[in-house]
Length: 451
View 1: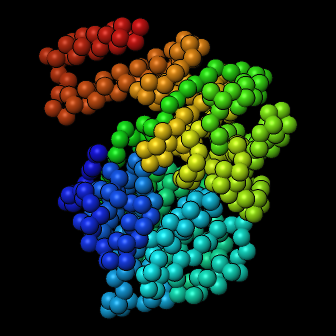
View 2 (view 1 turned 90 degrees about the horizontal axis):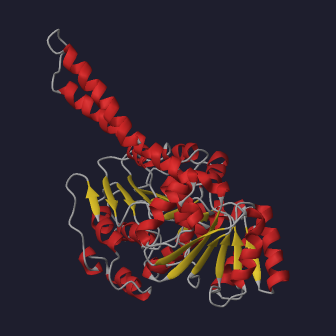
View 3 (view 1 turned 180 degrees about the vertical axis):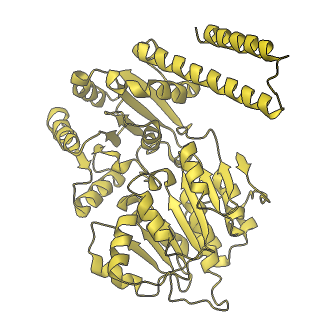
């Protein structure tokens, strides 16, 4: 665990250290939380002190409970001077409807039996009038996708002046183009004094810097290797040409040695999801369902329910299913189409191997994915993954390694020159020739290191 910030509280080792009230403590035990996970050990004491937080931990590591428990504990402290039970006190934003529904389900389990605890689920695909009515019923916690929340805010005026905690789940997605403007529009309506919590399994450096502009004196928490897949997964990468991918998939799903249903098969298009689902049903004779953004909410919910109840052997999904969802019985993920970024790959593999359980990930790649060769190798090699020789000997991989090495050398030289300039080096007639010789030597040395 790596923690950065000022005045960082000590981690806890037991939930009793949080001093939750009796009902919340009972609920924590009822949902099966015996001891805090590593991310919860550090997030809970910091969040309970109302600190802003950026937290990065592997998929399935208990991040949802890490932000819900402090929110609920804070809401239990009603009755303070100026406390208005009719206004929402916390907002959680997440990128997909399914993830919002899962967060609300978990919140309800942890809130059970606590007086004056109501949630509002604000997501697309469901009728808007009941959601508006729910917001007007004196709820404490809003769980929403940004788009639908903005749609409602544009039509009706709601008082968010009592918001004390604002959560961005899957923050790397929420601060990308398309979502970022919506997130900022929502935050502009919230009090400046609010606490902000940000979570994801992958937080690139650029996202972290952007996130820090929205926080005050934040605590940065990272558990495990940053932006890496779950250590409980066995990773296998297969070199499969585009025209052979269906045949390879059918072969895997026909072999009980490799097929461990229910399995999630990720593809890159909605049409592809439907076509592949039909092919699995007809060619392999297995029960398969598809889920993607063009499906109605009823169809999407039924597809997920069939997986959770083990009524289907395979669910073919776009990236819609790649973020945050806890698919309890899924132990195998197949990347029929490699996603466009290594971050999405990490999230998709995280649908298996949740909370320390074991699972497997099988990935099809070929030269269509050449831009990700170096990312794949550097991400999976430390996990003892099985990698194909076509990947390891690819000229694209060699070229990317050379480019990375050259960039690192240039960075090191630039930092060295900057360090020298900071020491007060001044070009004079006495040292001019020596500086030129040093520069020539560095260029020659740099070239030899690259070669």
